[in-house]
Amino acid sequence: MNIFYAPSSQINNGFAELLDQEAIHASKVMRAQEGDKLTIVDGEGGRYHGVVRRITKKSVQVEIEDEQHRSRPKPHFILAMGIIKKRDRLEFAVEKAIELGAAQICLFRSEHTIKENVRMDRLESLAISAMKQSLQAHLSTVEIYHSLEMMLDSIRADKILVAHEKVGEDKGSIDYESVSNAAKTLLLVGPEGGFSETEIRDLTEKGGQLVSLGPNRLRAETAAVAFMSQFL
Ligand code: SAH
Image 1: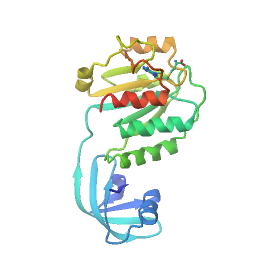
Image 2: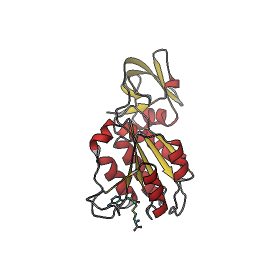
Image 3: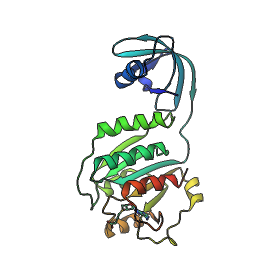
């Protein structure tokens, strides 16, 4: 199934309009023709089925025949990750976390962040393609923070879990029941150098629970995927 994205501002009076990359994807890549049926999501839970009525160079207009609206699946997961040096690895982590259901991605600079290489424009289009790929109708947000502290100040979560390779498997098990009862859960993964001792202390003081993802030391992007997978 091919899904296209149009924000709600492009959906009016029974018509949805695909623009920019989405229009090119529909008309040039997928070779949609007038009369073809397709599915559009608006990133806010709306899913529309319709028929292509008009194709121009810049847009594809779709007449909506049927629509459904759903609220975002609960619980709400926020994946926070220390910025890692290699951009492709960071982008991999963001894409996979969204496929696995993270509603929000927060990237933060931490004590052991080596280099910043974040391209927000790429991450935003990646969020759109990951949503479509995984047949979700809600667009995940991607945010960047200049420090771990600033991120913790602005994110309100009922539950904070911190992946930490040094916690020990016996102490670092996840309490699934409390996660499913929490409206918002924040999952934190450190950068390639891990969290500093001070950061771990601050996180635990703020109520963060240290979690083990098994005996092996994982790369940060693997840890992000493994962490999200615990809640499938
Ligand atoms: N501090 C380490 C490696 C950090 S790995 C070093 O440089 O030797 C990067 C991040 O992945 C960690 O901060 C942690 O959040 C996560 N991580 C990796 N392996 C993990 C494990 N076995 N359990 C929990 N978290 C892990």
